[in-house]
Image (tube, rainbow, N blue to C red):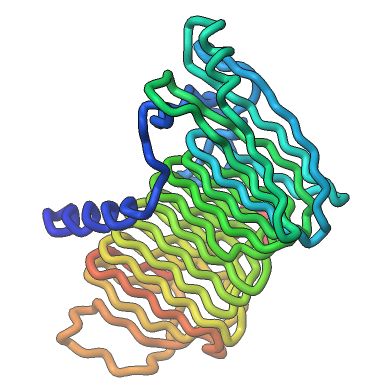
Length: 353
């Protein structure tokens, strides 16, 4: 990586991390406990696998649990604002919100830990047909404190989550906005992703659909089985992978990460894929034709035989390609300033048709 590329990456990361976060005094400093070990229990896929939510006791940490149940209309709203700790939201049947908050304190003196946990207050406020859930942490200099939330909510409710730690959301049909400031994010079977953003962690989305899916990650971003009218993603330095993503307009961008798009194209759809210094690999199934315009500062290759739609220029040095395959109905714009651009055919497994 060149010195200029490193500078762009660092400045981009600093700009991303400059977004508002929770104040970090002595009682709120972020020191997550060890998560589950790597292995089969991890969620996500590819190079951005994520540890599942924490459950049960963790060595060296004292814990206590608070539970609250509140009625909420089927199309009500839930807003969760959490400091250090994780948030898990699960869509369920019914009109009740079931909240389980696990307080954790890293303190060897059990009595001192229990006394401190008494001053960690879980607030649930009802207003305007919605609920707001947040934690009040004691002020002053304290040992590390975490609050993990596990919340069951009516699946048609609209949900907004902001957490210093990781965020997990599943089985939700209402509108979703989620931000994780220092943790990862996993979204499974969610319908309307208005905003999903991680400032310092990985992001994985599986089974999303709706009008719009908008996602940003400072590290890796993985999407699978996503169907939406518009899909917009952005990463800073990590890889981005889209598998079986269907959209009328897809915009995938990265500052210095690689971008892989694998799966069927949609007729008359537009795909804009851009990275400054990463590589682009597009692997369509070849059923729907496409009109390709590719620009790169590295290797440029298409495994599909293209009918030229623009004259090649010797000055381009083989780093610009314009051509059509099949009916040319899908529009592809692929740009990498210093990386490679590859349009590859899918590999048929042995014995496949």
